[in-house]
Figure 1: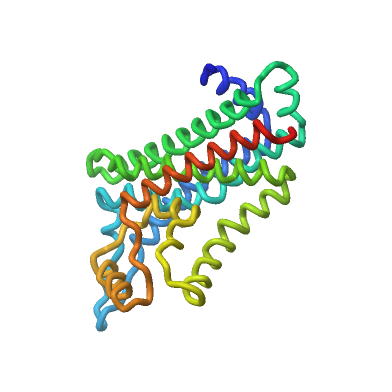
Figure 2: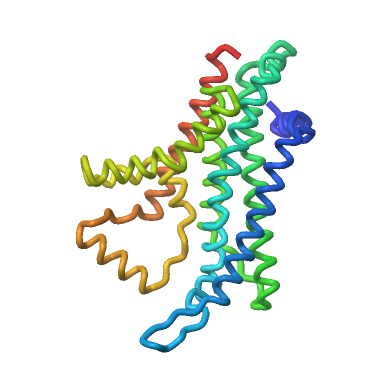
Amino acid sequence: MNPMHFLTLEWRKYSPSGTFRVIAALYFISFALILFLARQLSQNMTIDVNGAATLAPLSGIFTYPHNWELLANIGSWMNMFLLGFLGVLIITIEFSNRTLRQSVIFGMTRLELAVSKLVWALALALAATGFYLLLGFIEEILDRAGLGLPPVGSVLGFFAQALGYLLLGNLVGLLIRKTPLAELAYLAYVAFLEPVGRWIFYYTVARTPLLLYLPNTVFGALTPRPVLELEKQIRQSIVESGAATAPLSHSEVGLAALAYLLLFGALFCRRIVKSDL
C-alpha cells in the first residue's frame, strides 16, 4: 500500500468536483474573514466600568501565545461545519457515482479502498492545519511583534480536531449514503442533538462528567478559547457551587480524542470491508 499513490488517486477524483472546490474555498475564506472581523471588533470595543471607558478590553487574547489559541478556536467552527460537511460529501458522492464499487471491480481490495479514504482525510486535515499556521504567522507579521512559534498543543489539537470531524463526517456519509440526508444528520448531531441533549441529560438525569466525553464535546475541547484571569475565577466559582462540572484536563481531552480517532478509523474500515458497496 503506497500512501502517495492513494493520495494521487483521491486528488484526481475530487479536484475536478465543483462542490469540493466550493467547500474548500469557503473554508479558507471564512477562516480568514472571521479572524479579521474578530480582530477589528476587539480593537474597537469599549466597555464602561463605573463611568470609566476601557478601550479594547479583549486585546490580551491577541497577544502571544493566546493569539494561536484564539485562532485555533476560530478555526474549530470551520472544522466542525465545513470540514465535517466535506467528510460527508466525499463518501456520499462515491455512492452517487458508484465509484466505490468500480474501484473494487478494477482491482482495489476493500481494505485498500478504506485506507485510501483515510489517507485522503489525513491530507485534508494537514492542509487545514497548514492554513491555520499560515494565518497565524501572517497575523504576527502584520502586528510587527516578531514571529513566535505556535504552542505544540494548539497545533496538535487543531490537527486532531480537523481529522476527527472529517472521520465523523465519513462515518455519517457511509451509514446514510444520500448526500442531503447525511449532511442534515451530521448538522443535527453536532449543532443540536449532542450539545442540547448533553445539557438536558445533565440537569434532568445525572450530573456526571462522563457527558464531557461525548465525541463533539471532546473535539471542541481540543481548541479551547483563551480565557482571561477574571473569567477563570468566575468559572471556578461556578464549578465549586455545583452548577457545572469541572472541564476535562488537557491529557484527558487528548486521550479521549485519540481514542475516538482510532475508533472512527476502525469503524470506517470495517464498514467498507463488510458492507455492500
